[in-house]
Amino acid sequence: MKLSEKVVVVTGGSRGIGFAIAKLFSENGAKVVITSQDSQRLEKASSEIPNSFGIVADIRKKEQVKNVIDKAIEKFGKLDILVNNAGIFPKIKRLHEIDEDEWNEVLDVNLTGQFRFTKEAIPYLQKTSGSIINISSDAGLKAYQGFNADAYSASKAALIVLTKCWALEYAKDKIRVNCICPGVVDTDMTKPFMKTEKDIEFMNNEHPIGRIGQPVEVGNAALYFASDESSWTTGAVLTVDGGESIK
Image (cartoon, rainbow, N blue to C red):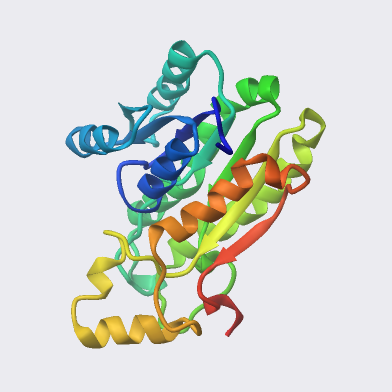
């Protein structure tokens, strides 16, 4: 069991990539805390993941973020791994069409929210020589023609750079910080873009390997970063994208 007795917080762990990560970590021996704003979805997800419990939290509220970390420590006594997974995807719009409130919301959730959780977790990760795994995106690595989601791309690019900053900043504390950049993965977030067979075919063909990804495939990468097998790996940015980013 690669993560035996490790304590993990997975933000946005009630569905999609976050759920897959939480479930895989649990199956490998971890005790898992998952977060979501949706209490019903959180309850359902927790019931399907052994050795887990859910805490309703809005990543935009620092008091609620602090409560998640406090509750995890209260229940398990320590924190070994933080997975910054929670995020939102805006409506596709060109820059001049984006409302400033829309822009700010995306950055608040996808970037400042990751800062909030990391800030609260660091004092406990320092005690365990822990690990942080940031879930970014291929959209943070390069521009895609016709992909008009500037705030999303900006937030994901910034998270990649923050991964490297935090890896250097906390290396002396033996905290490892790594990042995963998925391509298009089969989740609730991407379903609106694959309503027809033509849409599905287009998305599959965007990836040189010939298909979109599955959440567990990102989960496997996260499991590597969380485990001792990656004990000499920090500041890494791993694309899990069927070759999309190298086109």
